[in-house]
Image (cartoon, rainbow, N blue to C red; front, side):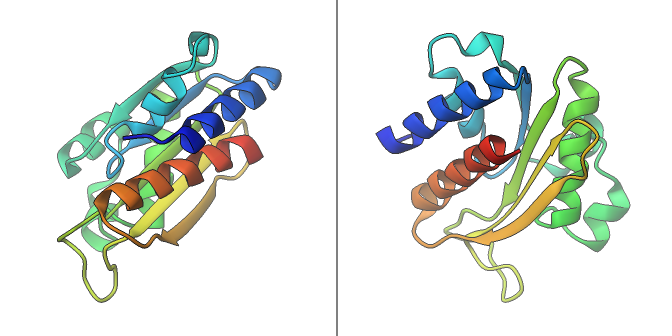
Length: 161
């Protein structure tokens, strides 16, 4: 599922995080654990990767990552607000982690709306006491292409943070 370019980017992310003495945790919805899979596909990743959460349902987003039911009701699961709450929740649930990335989106082929079409993915990244970086991306292609593009963007944000 993950191509060579994505795996190379994951290796670069690990090297960057290792140099900064970070431990990473992921909180994933639409990518179903692919960011964590890309990172842990690399030998020696255990000194950087704390773990990951796949919270596909709203119920798990609420109970595991402490995403507010008000946020989900008012903004939806696919929103920057939800992505930010997911990244804070991941850091709270993994106290040894120092950086987190979260992704929530619509990979398709169904589920899109005019306001949030298929390919919409909200990604948040947070390290230390910095304000979280959050963005909404619109990736083209089929389900596999959207998920792969989202993983790449998340890895890029880990490198930049």
